[in-house]
Image (cartoon, rainbow, N blue to C red; front, top):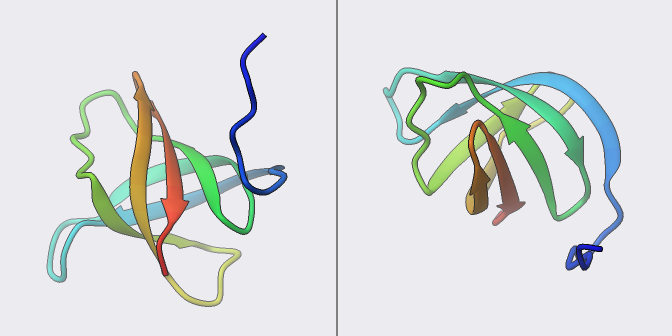
Length: 83
């Protein structure tokens, strides 16, 4: 069984979001599978190249969140919120 190394409990989210690497860049659509106060699991389309750091905007959030990728498994990514 895989060890849970998360610092906070995650809850199902299933929300649409978008991520942007830098100001003026074209947004990349994503699906947020689950999230916590400290991070989330997202999925992007297969042909998308996701940078190691970006800003995530989800319709449920009041403000965008700065993020960093901590793991990658195909189209799914584990991210932590950095600000």
